[in-house]
Length: 453
Image (tube, rainbow, N blue to C red; front, side):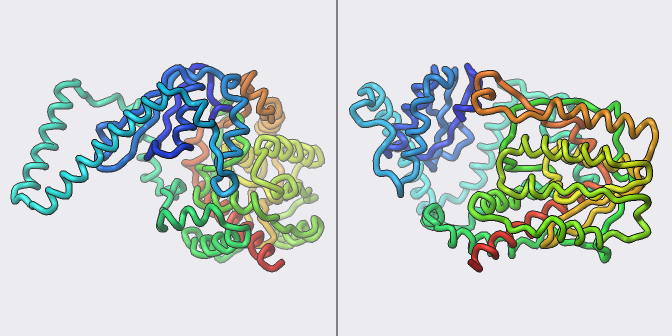
């Protein structure tokens, strides 16, 4: 957080208790890093629980907290370290007194509410339900009148046309709520998992995931430019803070991305020999689909190693694709192996490629990986413009260091086509399915390889 926060920025942290020494140290660290730190309990937060929010305003800058960052990470794991970030003698008495009064206030409030709830449960009053319903109605009505609440303009809606269109197009649901179907003690036990325990847990989780299956008899799905329509007028460069690790995507179920990151951080995904992999996918392509020569662009080695350095991988893969393009003549075909479609940048590149060829085959992912075959390159002015566009993207995909991101506010390419243009397309559902199956196969392969050692 400290590395990404802009000078003068705001930070909100959700907490439940302030009694532990580590909690006190972290709050004091926030006091050192921000001009103002306040502990709030919103009206919408249930009074019977201990939920509070630490609202920090006016970030002072990395130089105020950089000496403590390494110390913080050295003390965050209870199983490794028994000491705290700050010794007790370094915490000002005024700070400790404020924290004591704050903890006392919120704990007494919580106890009073719990006692009231118990009393209300024991002494059931007949008209309780009606009374509470009427009270809720009048509170809501008073709020609307007092603060003059009016409907917002449709253009400012958070759940607006995109959300409504997703229902209209019956788009797959990729953002899934994390289900905590285990106890707090089990959660603590999982923190201390060894690699073998994590491997078995991942294996069970992936085997239980049945949400996305290959629904087609053929192992190759065919698409044309009509399935991924793009216009040069839609081209719009959007820059932002570089994303090293992909944690969610509009093109894959987020739960699976979490599985992939966990597996890649602990285990090695075994891969086949390049020639064997190339021949395998080459044999999946119907012979009558290929006119001219077939150029192979294998990107597996770029993406398979780990879950970090996403910007560098996007840049290196684009360079490899452009180098393959230099070998293509009119009517030649291109086989791209191991190119993930998790980011708006990669999906945008995929859409451009799809619009350069007569048809595109999307192969069913399996233990060998996944691939796309772009058949019969078109030779016209529109394709030349798309190639120029691809070459232009190289300038915007950057892989800056953490220092450059913090001190120079370096940015990298986030997207170059609006997300609506990438999602509301006939091919979108199949992109999601392919991404899900790719991750499932990779995690299964990595875990099985580890457990068989």
